[in-house]
Image (cartoon, rainbow, N blue to C red):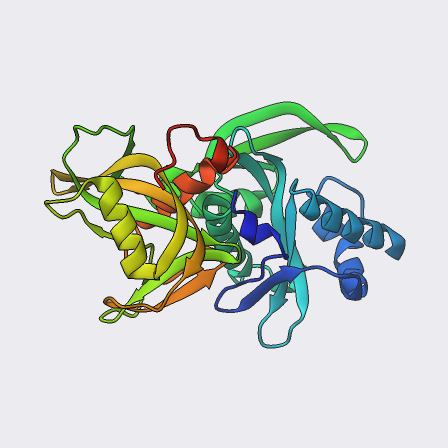
Length: 334
């Protein structure tokens, strides 16, 4: 899990939507959505009858976010700032890197592609920032629109769970869908490997963080951002190259450096190898290399230089963040 993404509620955006935290100011609009039978029929509860039920729901969303158990975004139209529905993750199992997805939308906005747009964005958040490997959805078999939506997003129907839940005073069958990280990103050209000092390494990549967020670099000749890294020179070890590249590409002069794993990139049958590092940076100096500027981001940026390689490396650092870095005996380089 990316700890920076959960300091404040993460705000996301798509072409037509802003995804932000639902607040008590939104009670009236959310009540208008949740009191409708055509919305609630497949939601698992009866339509709400009192606004204090919505107030309790919003309070629970807030508590669950701070406890890092779930996250629920309100969907707001960019043009009008109107709340039209919500979506998010619940039943988050960090140990197994999986969570369930849920959503609802006001009928006035059905069949416009808005929920598909929102879900694509939160799927990205789930795989990147929550470091999920598997995202699930439980859907009424009768809810054809929802079943079709998930399949269009790439979810696979794994079958029916007979009388799986007790919804609206009866035991309810549910279809279970799943989408795996590897199928969402299709990173078939990248493989993660255990460290091997006998391996012929060509690159180092250093996912570095300050107390305020992750460091991303912008090269003078590119418009995109990237994780710091570069070639290992003939006279260097991988660790020496990582220290040099971190300084050259971020200006870091005070840092703790940890080796994480090796990786391979398959290009037309030719595999080149690199080593991934994590750095905790305490002091930065002025940039003196080909990097034009560094950016401190709380989440992985959308516009990156290596979109099929570096997201996987970023996630690998997050996957290991549940272990206290300073307890990684034998991994600390400097």
